Length: 468
Image (cartoon, rainbow, N blue to C red):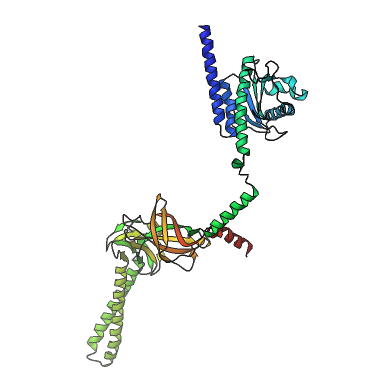
């Protein structure tokens, strides 16, 4: 039973070793390889802490990874001590060629054996601080290029119990696998393809070829601008007279029928004016009829009668005008559609002037795209230019449109910048987008060379900065 158990543990250990070697070979970066080295090696033999260092160039041995942490502070006292200790031992490894360990003949099937490193292997000042920062037993496994023997890096394991020879053999064998993976990563990094180390001739040929392609290849000039779905040919509703908005029964984007009440102005002033006009009319009529009866007896009263007739007609006209004003205080929808305005509370109690725009009545099926193209992004556009609209509510399905109108004078946009207002007609059938939806419009202008397309913005920025 004991022999069977030992065999099972050996098979499990061998499987773990093969798995670790495969994971190391598949590591695509130095960071991933370092993580596997310091954390996954624990599956093969126990240790309390480990660190992985590498040698990017001669005389430099920076710490790459420490077990148990994804990142570390290079100025932490423990990390500083580890770095100094690694440099002290690695400098000796770098100066001496690789040798077979004393307890294993070169070329033996045991391979490389990691060596135990203790306080005595460090300079006295560093050795005295060992137990303050690390467990007492250290196992040092240098990683050398399997072809050239060059020192590439190393692994340092720490624990509280002595290291057995079998564990040292496993660490050495595993170190050979890690060294192969590290050497492969370094060859990839320093290869001509990996680092794009092209020769000067090839580089210039490639550059000139790209310049030639950029000068010949034609691409459409394009620009991006914010866009909004607006009504096409809406009916504007304005204030009929001067007054104060007293009643606003409709809501924003509400469907209304022709003749439906939209809003009403305060009738107090007009009603008072009508009452005064009616009083003046009553007085004028009474005086007129009284004098008319006397005109039969006195001819002088006949001349005054004509003046009173004019006053009576004037008073009647004032009454008719005030009555008309009173009727006009209630504003009704001129046609069926959707009421377009922001908020009724913005108008309630607000004084308005005659002709001031209050709202608009629009057909929800007749919409178009309003675009505000910033002056700094302006390109040459003609009616009929292609437009693609990416609505914020459905950016993955752009809508096709055609430019219908482009202003030639810039105006202040909503964000305070100067912009040209453009109008575009949506193409295709289907249900039109809802009024008020916003998005981004991409406008396509004339075709230009790829070089001009790529350099247009940098040149414009340079001109604004330098004034040339």
